[in-house]
Image 1 (cartoon, rainbow, N blue to C red):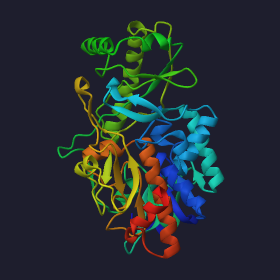
Image 2: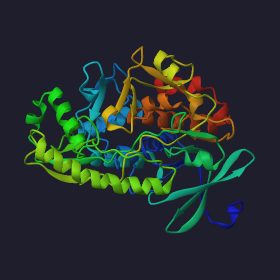
Image 3: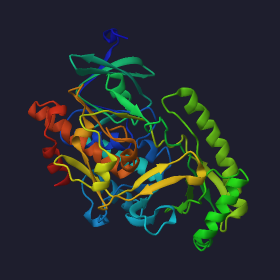
Length: 427
């Protein structure tokens, strides 16, 4: 639609963040902490996206030598509040798929506590949040976004801002504004989605004593019988005693509404079958029961913009520390496949860590647009490493800082020297 001006103006802001997920939460809170009038637009009833509504249950993406006392910035604030509220024990070592050479710093957490912590941080920052609100378009003028077009129970409205941050995971705002994107690997293959679930009344000590080789053999038999979707058992216990499971899988294209709808229905049916199989077959679960299922599936993959720099697998593996590297991570490349018998490809970066450049968060086309989180400019394999919670949060923080630097200096976000952003967020 070309004439958005017929719709009422909701308000004018310094910064508008499209999406209140992990990256959007951090972007909005950081921008507001820097004195900018900020709005976060979120379609769910809570912040956090996949990290809360998707029931992920584990923070991944810390740097290799990080510990609770070394945490800083918005990640440090979030983690320390979570520890204080007994929503996490903080950073521990987790072995991906039980592999001893795939040890990563991580933090198991309670997603309901995280919702409250994110609410607190955003409220204290001064940022405003509109829940139950979708953004449905971009009003463009001379290579800039003039208004974000939103829709809620008051109908269609316009929101004006100086800087817009797309933290939608689907690059929805960037796409609507005309930024080119890619989807999936070079063949168009997209990582599968998962619906997380929780069980209670588990004798978890018995499960921990169940040898890993026997777990793999049991999972294999479960796949042969059609009751399991992946060839491994994944259960982790939270602070409150509940156990969360990452076990369902569905092929899904989230840019196709029919595909997405069908996958949500399929995964709910999978969860019932898988949880029942666990209770009948897995040591420690004979007295367990299914207590909750996440409200929506966790997606690993969607659109990725083609920005000023495409962060590549080669750059991730070599660990080049860019002049404008605004976030660092040690999480391995983690590609989930559609065939549960070869569910993951895990590749640790050669140097143990890698660095994400600011240039991958901005575009050539739009001068007042920042992109944060899993929809930044990266190739398929690099994206499989950077797509996790803590890394996305740090990209969001960098976006909030960049918005302040741009407005303060008068330099468009896509012309800023990212080295200055790096110095602020990483020291």
